[in-house]
Image (cartoon, rainbow, N blue to C red; front, side, top):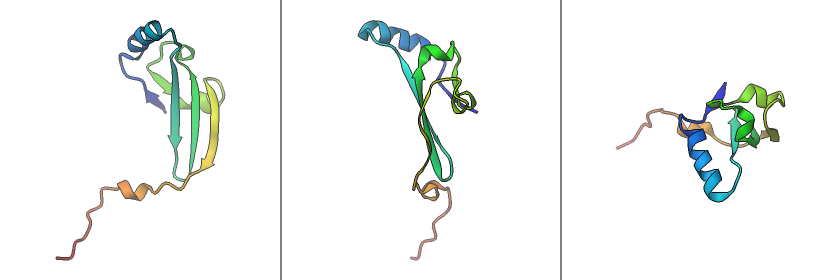
Length: 88
């Protein structure tokens, strides 16, 4: 599993790096049912891949882990596609 960077990620970041004299980085926030993790690293480390490989992030091969399996209290049920019964 991974996060898609899009087809123009490297072209767009190359222009921004040149214009701002900067180095492009990526950040991936992985949310599970009860926990979240955050990974961060330079775009260059992805070797032109079109996605951020979460398994490699989890294994410490790509990027740096900023937060690992921290408990969150996000209520995913708020975003379910369930019909709400209305009393009229």
